[in-house]
Image: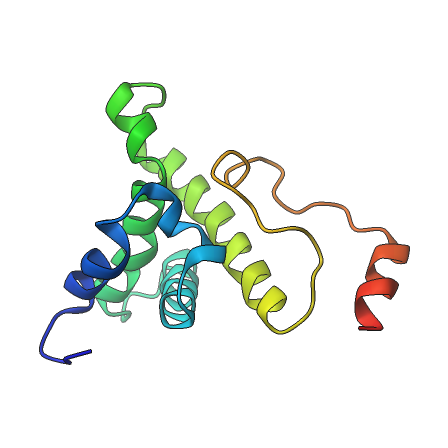
Length: 134
């Protein structure tokens, strides 16, 4: 894609102008998965030198996933709540990255489970051994 177009504009064109489920990590193109994961890492680490456009990527994706609930008033959003959602989204981004590498520790989240807490599911040794042998 043309580098003169901002990252945010590209994200809007490729993901945000689609239904909210397009922002699920399992539905993101590799480019957006990697960019969102990097942005989420920088955001959680409070990296003051991170590119603001980069850290807005995961924020925009989370807000897009929640857009229907926010519009309907089903949920309200505080800064703390948004940060919690970003943390859960970051975990799912990392798990999706692992799935794409062939390490399936848990099934991909869907729109109804992406922000479930606790996000980190307990994985039995048997499941891990079975996954590791693939």
